[in-house]
Length: 82
Image 1 (cartoon, rainbow, N blue to C red):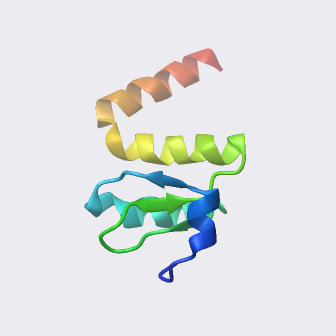
Image 2: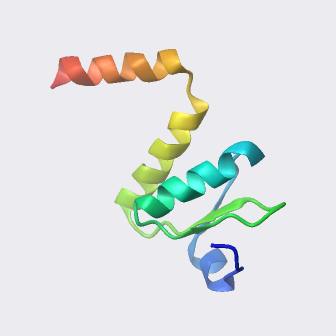
């Protein structure tokens, strides 16, 4: 996670996440099995090769950027839809 891998840059996407949230996003993505790197003073690098990985990335970042109220409303909509 700490060493730079040039192959990841060519295959992955650079994701702009605030400094305070980068490590949290990176750790969560690694828990989900998504390869990523969080290098100091650079953008978060994420390897996105599948639709599932893209949705998981979107979901993790959305959870950090959305207000609690927005997330609660979304969860309530999901409960009513199911």
